[in-house]
Image (cartoon, rainbow, N blue to C red; front, top):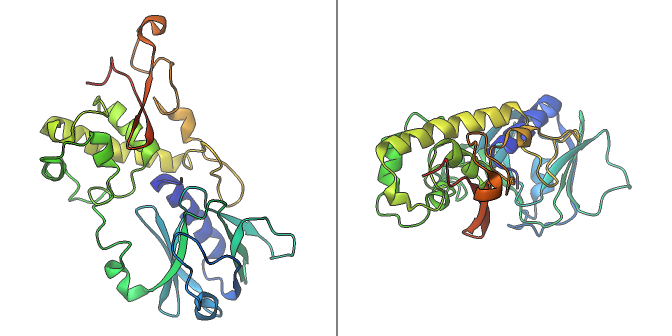
Length: 279
């Protein structure tokens, strides 16, 4: 699924294309996403213009000049595509269509685990999707001390704790493996076992990894692509993710003897690490 760097990339592309555009017509072809699209969605946004574009955690927000904000979440397979105009030649899973004065914006989601909904712009902080989120990686309050407090008493794997959006928002499966690798911490270690030095490394590399991934346009692992059809390139910089059996960048071990990068499943998610480099 698109994680923070991918959503930031999508948001930037949508902003570059549609800033100031007016929505001429909206069409909800399939309202049954993770949450039902509001029945009056089209009526409430037609005639409004895009005035601001933001990202919170893994959500894209497009603010309109009528006091409403469209909230987008891409789930496992959701993506946005740009077209010049909406035609009858649509793709099978094109669920939401926005025709604007600057072209068409189409939301496609084969698995329908994403969502598209509306909120009054002034009430975003109280919306149920956002009110319980933890800090973002660049928040000044995201510190080693904060992580230690949140990890205290947590017996779950530290990787599972990093995926908890109530602790730090925006980290997903791919980047959790990369962050813990660079922090030299085994992903299966109990969160409560992390010390202050290690927590400081997690904070440091969370910011570094996410910044580099954003600069590279995100990671294209399965079907993620930019709205213009281009792909992300950060997967070329992955140290461990999806590299089972290979030598990690910091090791000079005999892969035939060590087995190289290991893969396990934590919380139902594939997890990659090097048991020589990480402790």
